[in-house]
Image (cartoon, rainbow, N blue to C red; front, top):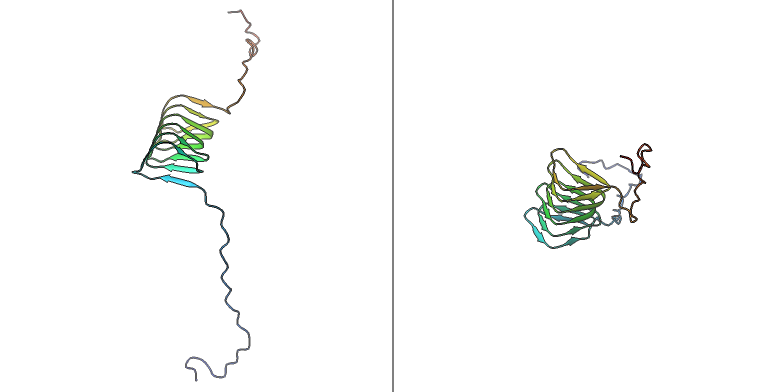
Length: 157
């Protein structure tokens, strides 16, 4: 005789079995992210990867297929080439970005910046030259003298 149930209970409905656990779906490959943590010092060239976050120090060239973020405590002494570059820390060297370069309010850059889109936030420190626009393989032709303003003619002063 069951203590908590009734003996005359006739449960004819079949009970549903617990669903079998599904095998985990194969996930997409993880992005190739690299973190240079605070306190870490790298000397030499740093290449590859999709995203590199630098919170430590890198003395040398950084060349990345994706993006580079120099964190607020990070420092790079050397040239950076990447698709996108964000400087929250310090960069002493040139920056070449194929899409976008950004220097945040806490960022400091001493070097030239070349990118189609450049953002320098208010409060940022920047000393260098900026070249914006899509790089072209053919040299640009200058308009003929006076072509932009018909009132200006060659030889007139």
